[in-house]
Length: 357
Image (cartoon, rainbow, N blue to C red; front, side):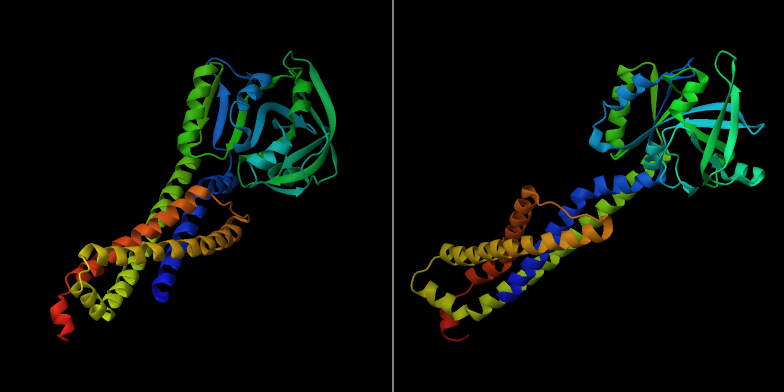
């Protein structure tokens, strides 16, 4: 009985641990996948080159804020830096750190409006270093020239086209261009599965005709593939554990029937019905399932916490529904495991057993 109890407890522990961890996997995996960049972007509608910043920010607020990891606006303009022609990009550096966490910066991200990031290729060409002051010049939307002295806060190295850009604060660039409420692209990093992202996209596309939302398919597709494989792994491990638990309990109960053959035969000889024998063994199985399930729930919580903390760096919360499912499956498995031993018990012939045959 102790062996069967431990088997049920271990099976319930693994079952609860896997279900608890899997419940948090989509959210946690979604946040981990955000390190690969934004998974949704807003672009202007056809025929337009820019969007209103306040309109874009109001649309972003329609997405549940707890799911938004970052939302970075972008605007591009041809500029010169120390008479060198290049492309300037305006953005919100606090949000860029969230939407593009893979960026490598030698120095610091700009903290003030008069600070900029310079791409690695430009820095190599001009021999510029963090802390140096440069002259950035260009023309605003009305053709009026402007010039501004800015300090290099850091050198950006991504290995991509960003290495040839200079990055300014969005408010500074819009101020120089005298278009304070303009954004060309909005990058969003949303911790949500592909299906949920598609619902957000359809809602925004329907309600805001001036904005065209698009999903970054390579990011969302990769996330969906990983989650599907993890789901199959969880199902496979759970099925194997439940099967092994069932076999262990069935073997133990069969041994109990064989040990108690004379007792069962004596009971039937003095008038016990098969229903009484069935109730006795099934009752034992139900009690075994409940006790093992309760013990397994406690063990499963610590098991899930250890996995979640080691993989995602955070603990898990207790979900009543998972506990109920674990207890229910533990009882169902033990009852199913008792079916074969019970059939063996009711087929015992009292006369043969009592004669020692």
